[in-house]
Image (cartoon, rainbow, N blue to C red; front, side, top):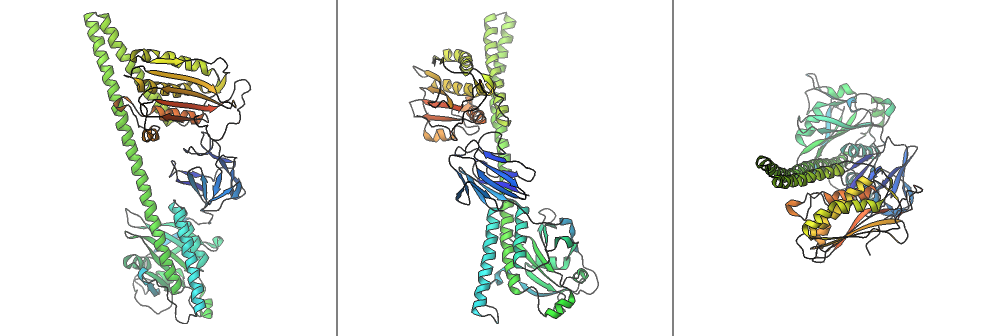
Length: 565
């Protein structure tokens, strides 16, 4: 299935299937892209994937940092399976299994019987037997040519292993490589189920797909390969009598077959099996075996490479699942802690309300209700931040007054500023037109930043928080600047503050506010920048492209947000 896998960057491990998409599939930073990446060096709409017939093409959308295919900068190029696409700091791998693979159900494991067994193992080999010396009768030129061919096969196998994260995709490509080098008619890869220890067919390939029929494999051969860890060449020739338990190979009509174990670091994970169905008359006339010792040794090496990849992919999947469970546990623990603190505040306020009612003391009732109301607002804010962070949403832009929105925010936090003795500076500009944005979402983003600024200046003499809004000199972006004279932050702290559940407020902070604010700004095609020095305060700049409410058209914003000046 044609897919894009993210193998480097914040979105590592994500997979995007391309099969069912007939239109351009965009890659970029903003919401609405088919592939949305959390990468500051990726443009809002950076590149796109287009399907043309049975092929896929990648094209750059005039991004600032360019689009790179296999370390080469491109404008447009056709994709091949295994190609690496780099946008910003993110690397994606295009994987496409274009092999026409029949259903895995067409592979049968045939049990032995009590009759005579016509199958004979004519050669066996272990991984330790793989050597590079010449065979009898080889000339130096023939040996060198064969060695170069084997090296090329192993190199391509190593590439397939390193560029593929999906086991099914990997096994299909391994079979494709085997068929390019071995003149087999049929082949399959079977993996051991970790629970039942039974073989399950994961990939099959036929040279003549239209003639594909049910494929029977001898249980006798499979058991021998798995038990001894040896690769084998089998033939109908009567030159090996090590088996006498069944006649399964004779029933299949197979003249020759190779079966090798897939041995990884920790044991055998499966087998690779290929066979040929040359008619008996042609085999007698040809007078030689189809499969040679060289085929057997190379397939053993390929089986080892494939096994290592299966083990690594299985380990990676388990690690991702473990990280997800750990993240869920951390989320539950963190949110439970904050909800518990809020509930304790509500309980304390409720106690004062009850005491005031019993004593008919209105002052105590009012004091208790103020505590309840503050904690009610905290839990409301926490829930809204959780919803904003967890829900992928498109902004709902409507013509709105940004200056009026910020004025409402200032009025909302003014009481908090008065309580801590902070001077809240806000000078509304008079030349700001109506803009198109989502007022509810943007209000939450700005409110989070302003609230953080007030928290930063608490208990400081001469506390001050300044809010400014302006358009840049080209008029293409609007900036909301929130500055404070708090304690400031170190570069190490700045690098972490936008991470989920990271807070500089200790038990008072949830670690959601700035994460949610950045998500909202990016949904608007913008971003948040921060500059700070210890003991000198901090400045946050929230910027997004200008879209006026007069014509509803977006100015052409730069691909990367402007830096602070």
